[in-house]
Image (tube, rainbow, N blue to C red; front, side):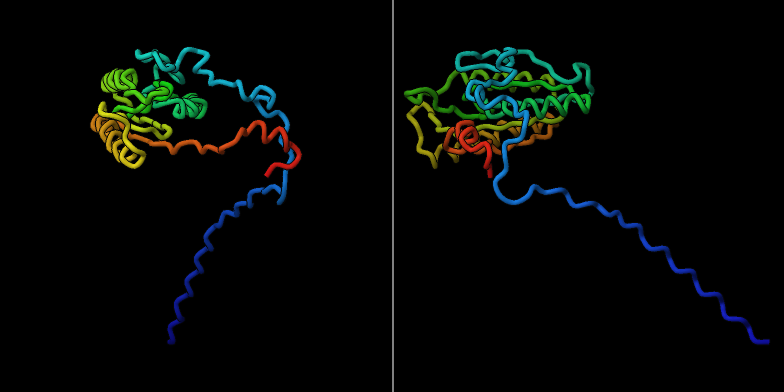
Length: 219
């Protein structure tokens, strides 16, 4: 007898492909200002961070970091946001994440004072900012005790005054880089993940005034 050929294998099912709709893009060209922008353009110039109104950030002469906790005060994960006023701009974002994820968020920010292991120039005479150096030492001591799992930090650009005078921009930039590395290395040794955040762009003009003059044709 002639043996029957083996049955052909069933074809493998085609993989399921998820079809993701393309995001809806605004039409090209100028767009009007969306409704409900906060703060209103009329008061944007005087708007300040909530943490400044709450006393949770320091100005020029403050040194002792305030004890401000956001999110879950008893959360298993401690996160720190630290740096100058440009780091403080990220408080709403970090606060929202802390509330969503159950983080214990500590905020340490001081005007004109980055988290850096060097002396930045400050004031009209570009003096060494000794108050910033003292604040840095306090914040590092606190973080060593808290042992955060993640540290977010940001700052604007600075000139350095090493005690012998103000360095030019190129040498200041080089010393700031080394100072950032030294500060961040201490946090990495504690087991923290350090997340440097690029500085907020400076438009070079009054943004609220520009938007107000062009509300119907923004690009």
